[in-house]
Image 1: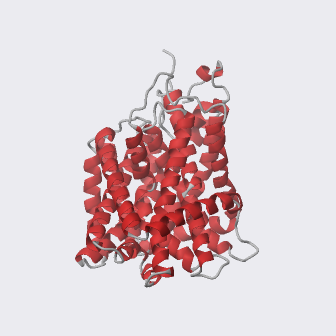
Image 2: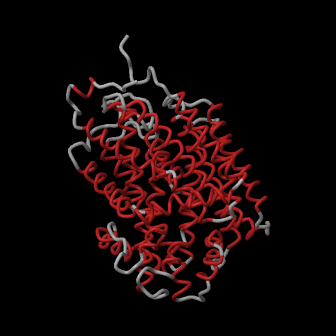
Length: 509
C-alpha cells in the first residue's frame, strides 16, 4: 500500500515538546509572574528595536502577496476538489472569522486606540483635527489590510494543503510536502512545536486582556472589586464555558456562538452610530477611509527614524503586526478548517476585504464618537481612557442613554468572544498536536485548555495590560521563520498546479 500524507507521522515528539514548553511557561507564570514578564519583555524588546525593519517589511509583503493571489491566475483554484461546496454559509463563515480572529480585540481597543493616538500622535501636536485624522489612519493600519492579509495568507497555505492536496492540517505540512532532505523531519517538528507555542502564548495574552476588560465592566455595572481573585474567577468560568462549547463540535458550538457574537456586536455598533453623532461618524469613516488608502503605501514602510520615534513604532505598529503573526498559526489553521470549497479569490476577498472594511467602520464609529466628545462635546473621555484602558468602552457608553444596558450587552459580548476565541484556539492546538485530525479528541482539548488556563492566570497576576501584549507577541518572533518556509513551500507547490508534479508529491514522513 502506497504511503499517504497522513501515515507514519512522528507527532508524538511535537505533543511532548509542546506540552513541556507550554506547561513550563504556565508554571513559571503562576509561581513567578514578574520573572515571566521580564523575560517576555527582553525578547520582544530586542526584536522590536533591532529587527524592526525586517518585521515591517515582512508584514507588508503579506498584503502584496495576498493581492497577487486574489487577482492573479491562481485565483480560480478551489480549496478542495473542483466540485466541493462550502461547508458553512457566507454569513456564518464571516462571523466565525471575526470570532476567532479579533472580535474581543475590537471591543477592547474600539474607542481606546483612536483616543490614544489622538491625544499623543507621533510627530504632531495632540488634541487637534490633524491628530484625529492621523489617529484613524494609524488605527486602520493596525487593524485593517495588514492584519487580515497576515491571517489570510497563513490560512490559505494550510487550507490549500489540507483540502487541495489531502494533507494533514499541520503547520509543518507545506514543509514536508514541498521539500526533501534529511533536515526536513527535524525542521518540520520544530515548526509544529513553534506553531503550538506561538498559538498558546498569543491566545493567553489576548485572553488576559479580555479578562481585564470583563473585570472592569463588572466594576462599572455591578461594583465588583478590581482584584486579582476576581480575574481568576472570570478565567475559571471562561474555561468551563469554552470547554463545554468545544465538546459540542465545530459546527454547533463555535458556529452558534459566532452568530450570536456578530448579532450583538452589530446591534451595539448601530446603536452608537444612530443614537450618537451619526453624521460626524459617517463623515469620519468616509474621510479616514480615503486617508488610509492614500497613505497606505508610505505608512506600510514608515519607522520614523528621522523624527526619533522608532520607539513609538515599536510600541504600537510593530507590536500589532507581530501580534497578528503570533495569531497567524491559530487563526490560519482555524480559518483553513472552515473554508473548504471556496476559491482562492473568494477566500482572499472574504478574509481580507470584508473584515477590513468592517473593522474600519467599527473604529470610525467608536473612535469617531470619542473624537466628538473631545472636540465638540464635554470632553474628559481621554483622561478616563488613560486612567484605565480596560474601562475605555464603558467610559464611552456613559456619554450615551441606556449606558447600563449598553455596558451589560458589551460585557456579554466580550465574554462570548473570549469563549469562542479560546474554543477555536483549543481546537486548533489540538489539531496541531493530534496528527492534523480535523476532529481532535475531547481529552486532547482538555489538556490544552488547562495549560492555556495556567498561562493566562500567570499573565493576569502580573497585573499589566502591557505584559499581556508582550506575552501575546513573544511567540511570533521565532515563528516568523516558519512562516517564510511555509510560503516558499506553498508557492513552489502552487507552481505545479495542473501538472504531473501536483499529484506525485507526498508528505515526507
